[in-house]
Length: 470
Ligand code: HEC
Ligand code: HEC
Ligand code: HEC
Ligand code: HEC
Ligand code: HEC
Image (cartoon, rainbow, N blue to C red; front, side, top):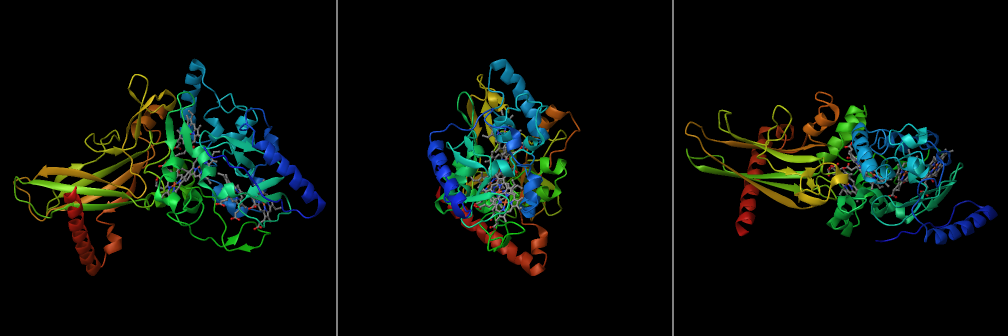
């Protein structure tokens, strides 16, 4: 595991600067041998509420407010699972603050947790993963399970070498522009058996994106979604104009909790992220004889995400393909991947996610019970999978036949959400990540429609050749 040590010069003129520099040099050497910050190391009033930063960093604040980082503590779905963990933790002697290290970090280091019901939390702790937590991370003891070392106080670390602020010291720290920063919390290991429960950082590290220097920040802290894209503007209202300022939306795929908690801007962006992640190609013939065995192949490619799709807490997430083949009169000849009346996915469909098994080998979504990985069929960055479907052409169907495919995503199974909150409490939205043929709007002119069909057909034949080679 790589250890990241920190900082460069403090930007504050004069003797004070020199003293602080020396002090910090000392601190950094000292911190090299330090343990991650733990319960009782600080009090919550050593951290500023985000509203204070917002006075000068209005844009960053506006982007962060409503993000899953700002909701990390208050998220109702997380809290329901946290309460279940609390019961198990007490029974089995597990560390009560395990989950909160990532979801409510200030609450943990200031010993406001436990209790897990949030009744001792200060307002600043309830802000979850917030400004003055993130910008006082001096160092990390590696990747996963949140091994941050905090130095709350007047220095705010960031990506700039030349920032000057009237209200705090600033310090450039390469760590902030490194995926390892995010890797502190975006890899999760079981607290006892060390089983990998989430590994977004590792998935990224082993991907072509890492090789090409496209880090988490490029996609999640710039307008680019699938790549770095400049965001000219000001990092602070009283600061200079900058060619690029990092954004703080931290959008991923969560359109469920953001939507339910009234964060429409982040909900919309999550849908946009999902719709940039995958591509579908279909290889199917447009006619068939009665009784013929008709084969349909769908290739799903992860074109935009710098990690597997889905990633993160993938025991909850669901991604699956819905495939419909119809005859010329619109009669369905084949349909796979539909939802039943309880919101369950057609058992014939492949659901892309991770299934954990408990000690008895039974599937579980309670990660603290996980003892092994039962299955994991997710699609790696820049990788593809091919689904093969087939059906028998009925007697009374009419040619030509047409194929429609939709790649769906939802943040959790409806059945699990109904179990947690009761039926009818929440409808988990199903997001269409990609469709085939592509949405009508994009090929509404007849000429384009034809062109689209030709492209699709020729893609189909290239695709067939690739498959036949295997
Ligand atoms: C009185 C105004 C003001 C307040 C309040 C303020 N800042 Fe700043 N901050 C600035 C200015 C000005 C800059 C420099 C911007 C630039 O150079 O582009 C800055 C820069 C930064 C940087 C960039 C440092 C770097 O090296 O890249 C970070 C991080 C930062 N502030 C965090 C915070 C946090 C966290 C808070 C709240 C606890 C906060 N600021 C409150 C004015 C303020
Ligand atoms: C090349 C662009 C790119 C890079 C690099 C990238 N992401 Fe993503 N990320 C996406 C896209 C697009 C999505 C939406 C699709 C999805 O859910 O995977 C996403 C989704 C996510 C999600 C939500 C996943 C879910 O289904 O709940 C998390 C969390 C996340 N990213 C974290 C990270 C972290 C941490 C890193 C670095 C280790 C990273 N991302 C690197 C583009 C990227
Ligand atoms: C999850 C941790 C996290 C949170 C929460 C967070 N930041 Fe940041 N912030 C970062 C990182 C990482 C960077 C640098 C990105 C890079 O260099 O790739 C950054 C950059 C900045 C910058 C410099 C931007 C630039 O390009 O000049 C400012 C200013 C800033 N943050 C202020 C804030 C404020 C204010 C808040 C709260 C509203 C906040 N941050 C919340 C992690 C965070
Ligand atoms: C202190 C731990 C911590 C750090 C550091 C951290 N995150 Fe997160 N992040 C979280 C938690 C916890 C959540 C989920 C909150 C929830 O769903 O309740 C989250 C959620 C997200 C999401 C939204 C996922 C979704 O499903 O929509 C994205 C995107 C994300 N983080 C990106 C980043 C990036 C990029 C960095 C590095 C600059 C980073 N995070 C650093 C703890 C952290
Ligand atoms: C090492 C950091 C870390 C720890 C420890 C951790 N989480 Fe998380 N949690 C995250 C991150 C990061 C995400 C967002 C990933 C994603 O979007 O898929 C997340 C997301 C979640 C979600 C999904 C929330 C949503 O809105 O969709 C639930 C539920 C959750 N965590 C529960 C827990 C529970 C319960 C524990 C303790 C047993 C726990 N977490 C421990 C980092 C952590």
